[in-house]
Image 1 (cartoon, rainbow, N blue to C red):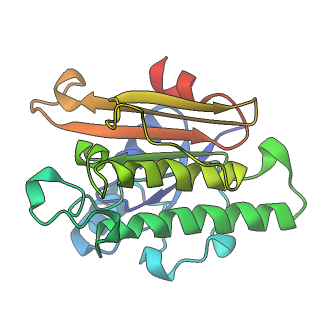
Image 2: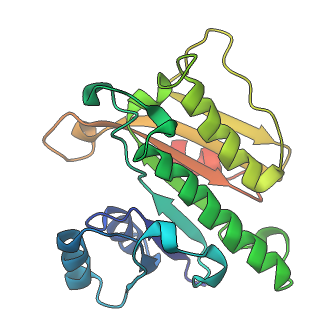
Length: 217
């Protein structure tokens, strides 16, 4: 069975393009900028455009196996100045991604699905390395990101800050055989792009242990 994907903060369709190349079907996308939407309509004519994420109800979206999203980075980025973090009006849209995923999974459970059949099973989040140091105390915003994604699969499980006070560029969380999460910093210059562009990629598997395999192997 072909896996399916929904793309939040879609931009010009980077995640749908990657998905298509490995046999995953992009089903829908959420984006508000006109030009990126024109680009993705050209390259993915069958992908449905859902509009503004703040107006979406995850329970009403077509269920997909994977939800991806590179939530706005401006308030997390070291290069952007004020660094309001997840409290900022732009980077705070991260919480909308969490909400949509929760709504879809809750609706799936109400339909009678259980365990690994509940969609989405996986998420993939992308953002700037400034997320590791944003917040008060520094790094608190990334702890919140981990906490929010973990809560989708496991409820209120506390995620502690690292003893050193600094997040490592790669890590994982495994909770038995029912939840896994992994993150890793990747630099575009090593992936066929002629520029140095480092980003965090985070994968969570809400009902299994596959996240480290997906991201590291």
